[in-house]
Length: 211
Image 1 (cartoon, rainbow, N blue to C red):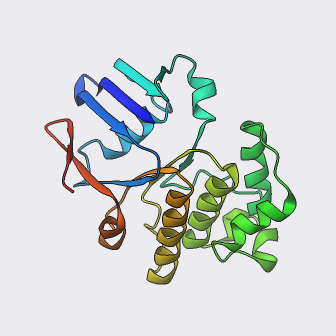
Image 2: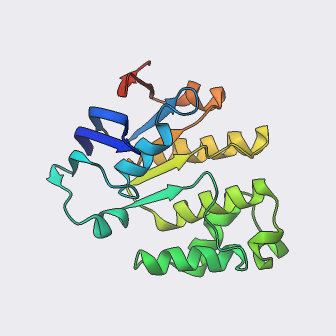
């Protein structure tokens, strides 16, 4: 589905990723683990087109990606820092993402994506700046669900969630896997890693499978 070919990336003259080759398949959950600073989040940014690679190619369904503006709209990204507009409420934040991706969903579908993350009632009317970190993280995940893309890239999706909500997120990811979605996440949550189909890390600037 998503193939990286000879991907390299440097920042401030420091090589972070070196000649990475990997093929991510639909219907699987991938977890990238490892200590901070080895390039996990950078890899997510590069493969999603948020950060431009210095060399190599990205293929989606065997077609080389050349227009990254279009490519970015074919996946949804759960940011570690949420990336929400603070003065807007959860529904307004999701609607903006839908507009950017040029997607239309019913109000019922939008509310359903929020409900799956236990977000409802007056919480949906509050500016995101007034919500807790865990609530904002769930809004960010709900936004990814509403976009209904083939690929979901998530950077520490449960980093600010309690155990119950973390388990709920993983249950949602498992249901998306059954819908033939591809989920690629960076996480330090061992309970998520246990349920991933493939666990990987970055060693010597290369992507290496652990499981």
